[in-house]
Length: 344
Image (cartoon, rainbow, N blue to C red):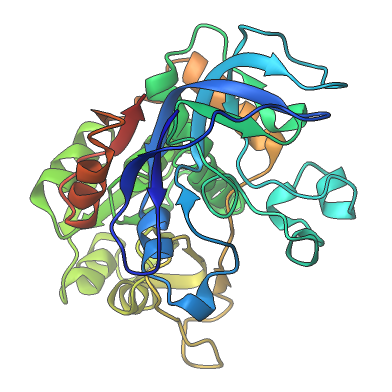
């Protein structure tokens, strides 16, 4: 089969031919219908040799959708031909976090050498994907796999982040979304669907700000040195109730710290390498700073239910598997408006 692989440190991703996988005991083989490209993939491809904890080459793609092609011995819970998406943050399944469905916070994954598909295990940028356990599959029924597959990360991750702050996102509150690309434009829609907050969206790209407004942002601002002051003006000097940073760079985290208000939340979702100092007098009183990761299996089901209700409209640009290297170049250059999806 064809697969898009990251072959070696510093090399560009390339389409190669690899053996078709076969499901072993308890495993499920999917015929891939859609796979999402993500900035996390670019981050992994920027790691040095001592930062990579898994062998290369690696088939990319941690957002996956497909139809069940075959079941390994003992695998139950899904049927051949069923349309599903993959819950990506695989865990051990038995620790206390996994028992709550929070495999994104598995306590044994590192010591057991368990990795998500596309981030250690072979991913979905291929004609077929091997899934370790049926519990990591969620049926999607008649949802469009191309528009649904980004929800497994670009939907689930902001959904989980927003739920952490739901009690504060009441009428009269202000939520700031920094970065309105793949995750950010979904976060805006989730905030509008789940809360009564006013949404202020920031980006450095006019096209992405236009997208932010089109999906429901009440206000859009350029993310520059004046942005924190503008947010304080919009909030009568109080600052934002919640700041969701989907970039995570030093400049955006400085902006987050400068725009959050007393008892506010700063949630760092992006992996841009920045840090936010925390200490008495550094941030307003009782500010909570979080860095969540992905979301739980039950939350993925909730996100898909929102999609069925018509609350989410993920903007996608589609590419064939042969075009996938080009998709990553566009993503790296900030030229994808929404989410890039590869259709094998």
